[in-house]
Length: 322
Ligand SMILES: [Zn+2]
Image (tube, rainbow, N blue to C red; front, side, top):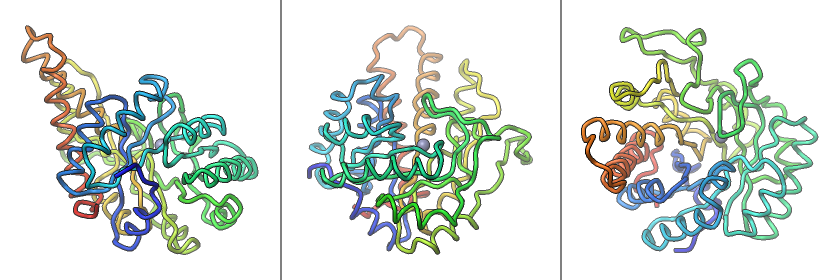
């Protein structure tokens, strides 16, 4: 089937108490690993492209890779989404260039500027059959060239959401309830340590999520920065020449819980990066004589597929929902 918007996906996810996975794509192996898992698990999927991915791989290559996935996986619905569109021009270029969904992220601007800028994108997008995700509240962490220090992050204010959605006409809303971008989501002093010495982050603010949902009944909510930073891969990276001390993510049980509520889209990027890097580091360490990229990208792609499968089945709950 051709690429779709997330409208039907989110309606079903909201009613069914699960979330759709939104995975970032940068190259062919990542697109293949994600969509092969979704095809086998019969899961709907959102493939998202950041500004950094467009700068790295080129808009046309990414669109054509995702269109190729849609041809290879006709049994599952696939959305092509712009992640963190910084301005109208970037959103317009994606709307005109084959995307079915865009995010306009003006969360660092004033409430009024966020409303005005988001509304402009929504009007253009809706005229072209494309849906829009907006954001209220600010996540900490690093996402491509967006960097927000922990002290500059702020939770979404539930009292603002009704006015924001009514005035902008956005189709989904990303909120800040304590998730964070990157593989170092929390500093050690924000966390406690468990018996294995692994950092345990502060819990997500489910009270904020519940208040937002009460004010926006039936409206799809999005969580960014929702990698769990699997410690097996952090260990694998560190065992094979890497250095990622105290990398920590969002516990999967909390994401599972959010998916049963109004959260319809959960963004996962760092976990796929860790999977790919750990696998390739291990391969290089164990096979110093090998130099054919296919030989190390093949296990990397296979492990991305298994990481995604785990998310679909055990975290998002969207397996079998295509
Ligand atoms: Zn994000």
